[in-house]
Image (cartoon, rainbow, N blue to C red; front, side, top):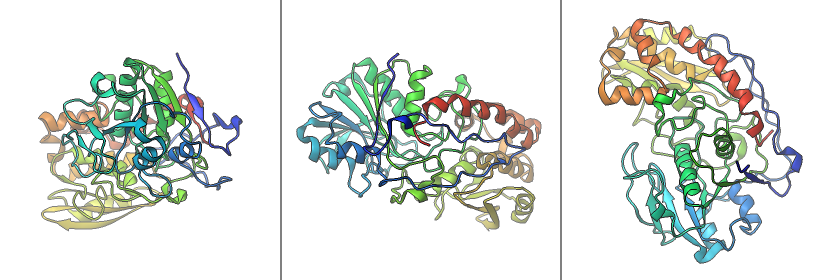
Length: 422
């Protein structure tokens, strides 16, 4: 197997290729009994993968015909579109663009097909990777020599940008194309590992690789691990352009970068944390997670649920960094969440705890009425059908969460040699 080349920032030392990850004690109950590593500023300016590549005159891809997987999050550190910077640096050698779910401008709703179109910024064709196909076809890749991936992920398995990367890597390998990842920060930081595993039966585009629901890795690190662990059917020639100045203790707020919404319901730099807390819950029936409000995924409620009862339940939870307030609207009752980026609580565990309690307060209607395509997607997002069956049987939420912990601890060890940042 070809091991990927790692392209380091100019100021990075060669010895920093693979550094020890922050090892976390096994969580007790639903709380991660750990403290987020304190952020220590790195020497030298912060640079994204695209900034590092540009600072070297695009040497890695110069003279080659380049295709770019891109959208509205693909920006340089100074706020210029990646495709604009690459077109200026490469000229006519930037020949094609490829857009994931939500389209090149990030305005298309979740699950809706994206059309192939012409980009009004560069004049290039933007091939859809979320339409009739989600994997680039040989015809799409025929004009290029190298496929570059530059999307801002949010650090959660069910978000589809990493799935796009994985199937694009396979397509590049099948067509003999080089694959380059321009690395970007994980907005959740690099220490948080949470949530259920993915059973092979439930592999889908909202769960393409067998990592925990929250993996604590960057796109470049995941690409390396996927190639090494056989998670891609064919392994391409892979190059990862590493960031400068990012460390695992950093959340988005520590980078100094502007946040560009990754999709319509992830508008804020803190939105990924709320996505963890209610994203699974949102797949159930008759629930409210705040879609359409000022803070999507920032609410947890159910039809007919007494907000004070759910608030009282949440007050009994030990969730450092997460607080609650009751709300009622349009026949729904529940709690608003306030999550600090430095929260040490197991935020994904909240998804199960809140779902179980809302289901109880609704008399079992939240789970009892699920079925068909909605249940199928719910199971795909969670990674198995166990949560649905456990909640129907009345298995305590704490017991469900506790099953993740040994798996997550094992994953922290398995990912160790693929980590590129301290």
